[in-house]
Length: 370
Ligand code: MN
Ligand code: MN
Image (cartoon, rainbow, N blue to C red; front, side, top):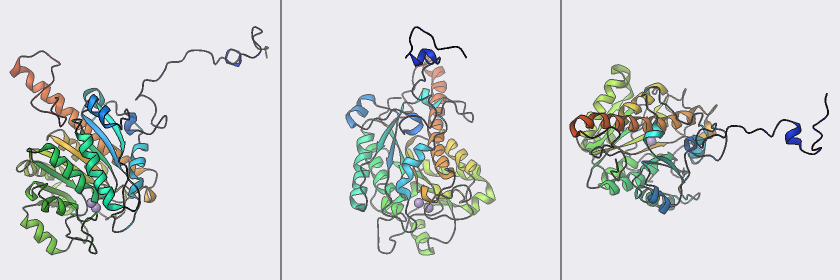
């Protein structure tokens, strides 16, 4: 073995060949396990004024809150687990042939300021934080958190996009339309009822997919019918297939809404593929059915927000549930990107403008920047 270079006895970099220049990673290209925890390695911008200056198309927002669950707690750990389940930077969607982050500016707006054991405060903070984030023009994408949060979140979305009407496609094993759970009217089994009763959302603009199991009782379905709600049981998905059901849901929701909020309770997926949740129901969607459905919806309707809720990491195995949730958000972003690209392609012949001009008529961001 030859002795180290004599010109410097203590230059270990030179002596060991560590003084070469290596290529530096671009931000966002780093592996998912490197660096601060942010959704897909996106820039983290928590300051509202900075968000407004940047005016992103999409803002990821964690709401680590599970004070309103009826059964197993743990969804407060969901946002962090979903962010950590990143194994991809989201470069190129093979299903849609788009590079979502080249088409849409997506940032991670951090977590809402939640403290434990103060559920009224949690709902108020969620409402206020979504208003703040949306004041930048960004479409909010919520990492939950228990499903009770969708009440304040969708209220804030409805308030922001008015006079445009919000509708919802809601994937869930459960209808979440009870009047109360054990006397509690703001639980995770009641948010859709509160949204309709408060006027934030027209019952006719709420379409549900994946309901199964043994809840709610017939009287609740009676109430739902009275509101003009539409729902597609898991049994119908089994009989007709997910594509036919999603086609119907898209038509139904657009009859009474101008923009669509996509709410995904991860328990819509079969517990064999998404065990990490508080109230699992056997016999659910395949992961690939849900991801396909999400892509089809986001690429065909104007999305004004989305959430993925009820991911409870303490019951998860091998991060499988967190990965499904992570991918639901990414497929939504890719679908929106594909819709925007298609709109640009459609517009060019009519307008005669040059390639690359953004479509102003089919906004992706709430602010309508294009
Ligand atoms: Mn559920
Ligand atoms: Mn739910």
